[in-house]
Image (cartoon, rainbow, N blue to C red):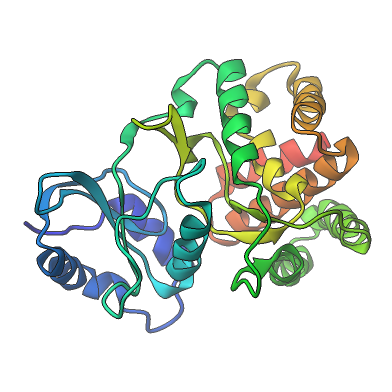
Length: 301
């Protein structure tokens, strides 16, 4: 079959692709080779799919349902592999093959229900189930781990935020507040854990061996509040549409912090940083509507 990358993937990778990158052009051939090597039967490409990888629903030679995932190096697929191996299926999707010379940029994964995420539940139930899944992922990282740290990742992001503020003075006050929060948070970090890194409701899918399992990590080592911060702003468009959106957000911070035993002020600080970083990045690539939502949300914190 033709492995046509979904438009969502093409658009997202196009926003961040370095000059001369040809991963998308080579993707159909790479997918064909990965399928043939593993003797897989292809059912369909998952649409709309993710923003950083091609996801293909397949069956293995013995008929077992599985997922084949192909991602460019800049999406850090080998880091994802290492995290999934360390979690060993506890709270997250399982790997279906060991690392070999033929697995670079390719993951063969347990098949979940790709069209049923926690986001399909009512909001209160969705937050509860997502938080429970996230708690299971917060484990001690392996010795000599290969993962990026929160300080390293947010350091890169901070440089881009400063450049964004210089080019757009309108966002400068929020950027200043976010950078000040980051500096204070990193000055006295609590216990470090392996984190999902990009956790949100749509990253939690229904499974067979467990009701809900996380997918698509961009793992990082740091404090739990950093991971939880992305969950705070889930369904941000609904929050913005509510007359009580600001107070609802503050209650959500309080409720999530208490339920997962995270310091409320640290959660608020990382939520502010991550929302501003995402908003500035969205504005930089021309997603103005997303930027406005995120920056308004950040202003409530």
